Length: 159
Image (cartoon, rainbow, N blue to C red; front, side, top):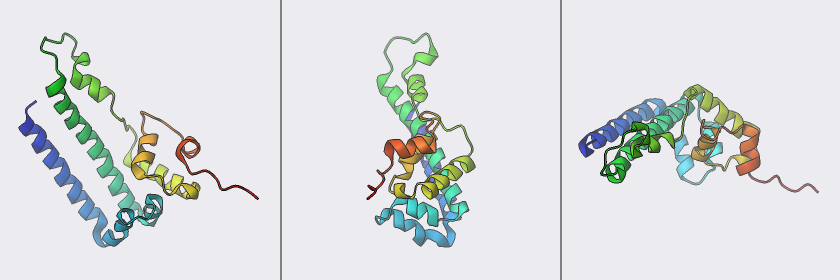
């Protein structure tokens, strides 16, 4: 794979992401800034309307897929052995792709799961969106209860 194609692919991905984000955000841009200004990501997520949430998830899923694929292409350029590989599934590119995050469900599913998590486990609003989505991926396949137990905030002590 040549680097020119990878750069064009990345540029197209970024363009599509920004177009989707601009269309989805509309007049809600100021509410999104709360994530970057220190408010817990879960609190900001719960303030967004459903179309903003869905736009974020779509952009995230596309960015993970395209970014990981491009990274695997670059890795393949550097890690490919000099001898011919008889099984294409054993190439550095194929092994890299196989190790990536998998998201087979719809963006609506992931949006609903994130909303349910932050609504149900309000003490966990500080868990970053990317960490929560990684836990929901097919690759990790955790339930909302498992995520709360494994990476959530400890419950305050009872008195």
